[in-house]
Image (cartoon, rainbow, N blue to C red; front, side, top):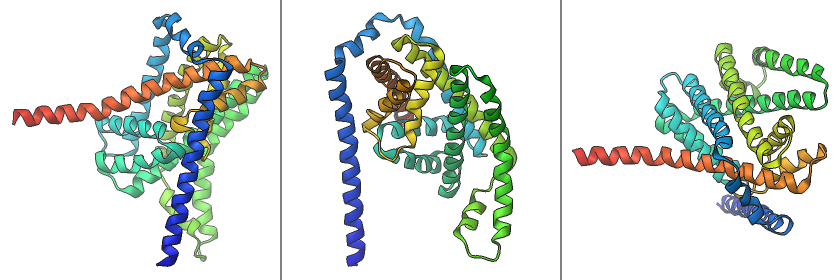
Length: 313
């Protein structure tokens, strides 16, 4: 009993420390932007840029949402498109708003509620989604860097990794349990649970790469507008922000860490620190705005429909 209380207190302490760090990161961004650039300068471009220039990026982001909904619907056999979209939008909302990737935990809860599946299957789906997401981001980054360095020859190895990834995964899924069949290893149990049909993995990977191409084209478009930079440079900078998702600790709603990822990558390309920081903040505001709007709509629309049904009864 004493041990469990101590563990509980330790976990609470760790959580509080991590939350404090997230808050500090967010405040650091707010103060840094205020001192180095000024928030009025950050917001000023929104009043000057024609809306027509932003619309293509909005369409691409919404198209990426459509692809992510289809990916969920394709993975869960009995899933319907409206329910899959609801899960995707709400998971996206919580994942962007909650610190330290705790928003990821909303996926199995939402999938169980809306898709009539169990926790284990939803966790397996989330695992593969994130593996393929990281793979796709890295492959697009290598291709973009190859173009930036003017060495397109590196695109070929990236495409090779893309096409052999699933066969390699299938090989290890088959061989490792066989090699350690007589040993009681948790690895065997985990691999058996994660084992998925090759066709399903391929479909998931293709939905994932299409989603990330659409999303990163949108983000690169927004960044290039605010930073007035080359499209390839903007793509690499946007990927720098997205890669911060693998960090264990983030600022509140990703504020601070996302911009730090963009600036860190941009500095390697000799881009202006102030320029990329301002563009990174505006890109983040853009994606957070769409996330909030679509996420809140996914929460409100079912409630409005339910209220109407209740009134009709």
